[in-house]
Structures are given as C-alpha cells and as structure tokens.
Amino acid sequence: MYLKKSVWILLGSILVLTVSSSACSGGTPTSRTLTASPPTIGATRWVNDFSELPKGTASHVDVVYFHRSVRCEACLNAENYTRETLAKYFAPQIQSGLISLQVLDMELPQNSDLVKKFDAAGSSLYLSILIQGTEYLCPNQDIWFYTSNKYLFVDTLRKKLASLVESS
Image (cartoon, rainbow, N blue to C red; front, side):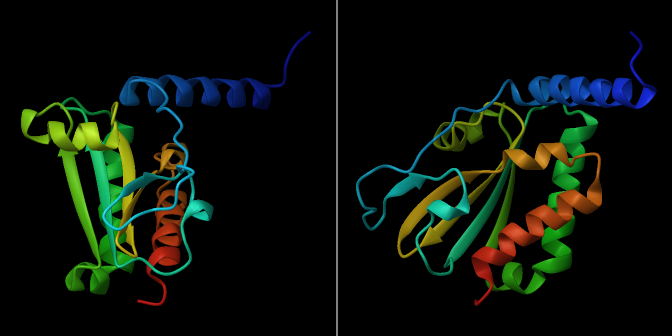
C-alpha cells in the first residue's frame, strides 16, 4: 500500500523535529510539579504551566536561555527569536527591570550553578517568575516546535510574557 506524498512529508517532519530536539537538548527534560505545601517567602517552586501560578502579576520575570557551546540552527533561532520578542514587545519592561534576559552557555564552568538550579540538560528556555516573594521556574518546551517558524515562536513567547506582566 502506498502512502500519499503529504503523509510521507508529515512523517519526515516529525522525525526531523524529534531528532533535532533530542540532539540539541540532550533528551526530554523531566517533568516537575508544584509541591503540595504552600509557597513561603523566598522559596523556589517548579511549575509546568501558568495555571499553577498564584493569582497576581509578576514583580519580575527572568527569561533564561541555555545553549551548548556548539549550536545548531534551531538553537540559534531560539535565541534570536527570544531577543526579537523582548526587543519588539517588551522594551519598556526590559528598561524598567521588570523583565530580564540571560543567555548562558551551559558548558561553561561559570554557569554551573544556574545549570543546576534549572536542571538544564541542553538547549532550553525557562521563565523564572517572581510573584509575591516566591520564585516559580517554568520550562518552555513548546518553543522547540516553532524554531523554524519565527511568527509562531514570537507569538507564543509574547503571549506568555504578556500574561505575566499585563497589568504592570
């Protein structure tokens, strides 16, 4: 039985995404869940998505992008699209210090503490969100689906950041 050309293209695209994502990231990051105990001032908590965040706007958002020393096109796109999103849509928040960006080579010794903190295992984008004195670490794995589509990447990241700082 012969498959239509469009099915082969779709299957090939999925395979390429899977292989390139695994090669750059060193595998799929482990899932983290919010701990059962209520947050305390100065605590750090993992969240898988924004529905796990407490109500209220963030007092600070740190966009943290990790990469390896040798970088592929998808990794370079992720950094460039992240920078473009921040510059185009969040310049006032960057200027005021509400949003910051860190781009870190995870293989450099001076970044080892942050690599451990974020449990980074390769190219990855995290948001560190400060709400009411508690830091929430949120991985953004979905952006890897959009590294070959600038519009979708920028739009996805823009919406996430806007939802965190909308009334600031």
